[in-house]
Length: 118
Image 1 (cartoon, rainbow, N blue to C red):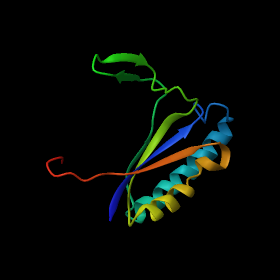
Image 2 (tube, helix red, strand yellow):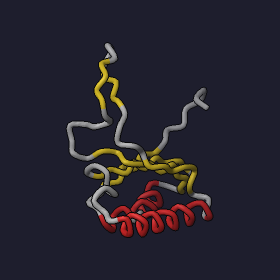
Image 3 (tube, rainbow, N blue to C red):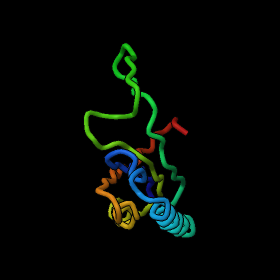
Image 4 (cartoon, rainbow, N blue to C red):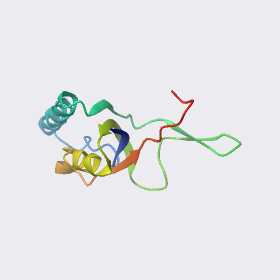
């Protein structure tokens, strides 16, 4: 088994333009998705991220407000998964309900295991 980080990217807060009913429906779908991953033992952790934050850049430690790159996409959440391989992680990511209502991107990154870290 291998661990993966999935970074959920959208163009800003993807829930912002949904009605309260649509937001609730989305939260229920995500809850079911997360519940299934937990039951199967594939999920180690998952949380949405707030829109605020900071970026520290370079040796001087320059700080920019907001977690925003030059791109319009921002990371709005993450999933920490356990999967057999990258192909299984891809299949898990493709089932994420974020794709139903949003032009979203999920970046899948294998976690490198290094001696001496954890």
